[in-house]
Image 1 (tube, one colour):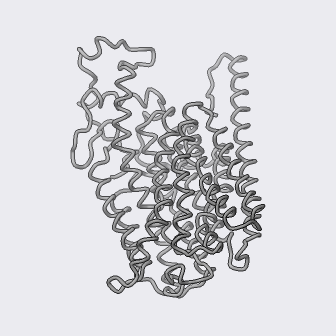
Image 2 (tube, rainbow, N blue to C red):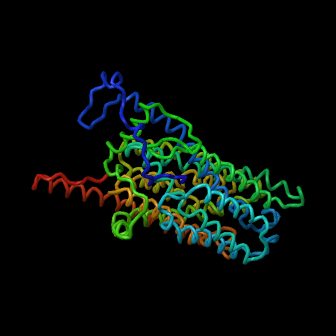
Image 3 (cartoon, rainbow, N blue to C red):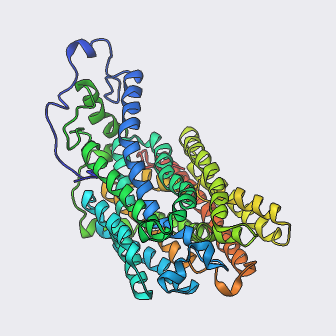
Length: 490
């Protein structure tokens, strides 16, 4: 098992506690903590250097395999896309349908893969599908490979997010979610630069440039999948990888096993599978649907812009490969913004405000693109690059906000699947926002993204208010009845 979030295996020797000489100088506080802050910081740094890089590397592979098609998006000149549409034998609108099926495949099985069994088999499956896209020809083959890729990738991201919540305390999760999503943004930023070089390989070994793109991206995922199974620790109680490497001392293993359950006792419960009753309970929680709708409304415009940004830049008169390079600039800037937003959310413990602030920046930048639509190409290019830098910094924070407000491990896992399902469902409609009959200025597309995002901002504000109202009601009831009630993170 790769992402062992629900594993119940334990090792008595790992959690037997520290030696007498170690605890003699560190008294136990009211919470049962018998280690120093410096010891805990050292453990967290080790987790940051072991768990997070492995998860990030696989996320890079997942996004490269899923998103490399964006570097081949249609434009007015097929030569600018390495002749992908012509070689495969599809039209621009058929291309959009294929992108929809990719996200549909993910949505269909996102909840069905919640039990943490995602592993090397799943990584290998989607990497092989990516590689075999090399041999597609015709509309039917294009559609089949896109939906197969979505099905094979389904459930991996929520399982990884759940795994992070198992290793880290609630006060640490927003930053780590943001770090994890750096894999997505790094792939998004580098895909254009990689395409700039790989598409020039047309003719090498008798293959086109886009065929080499699928092959090399798929081979990368095979490699990181092997690294993941060999080096990712199993779980808190047994923090050893498949290879048996001992990353932690006995004292560190003791701290790892106890610190997260002491922070959130709900994480002490270990589940291997999710019952139908737990699924109904989690899906019946109306508070989850606020985050779901927020994500659904805000990610759709993101998907549309990420898919068609290279074509928008190419429409300004730049060649296709240069367009991919220009688009990557905005994403490289976003790589700096995302961890800052995650750190701010953990530092201030005001995740809702960070989410709405990120949405608002994204909204006003989209509006700027519409207002600048008749400006010179340098101005339009500049504002488009800045817009790409602020598309999704709020998304990891929204996911962590939902996660820490979950009432049980099963609910947390289901909610993580739902939030990723929402993002992929947004991709279904987002793939159809920029259409051929609206080119080259895309007036309708820009207006559509602005209207949808405005609704998302409203939902974000409502979500902030709802949690505050619930906490205020709980405080009044506590005062009246003298019973301690649950408070929600805002």
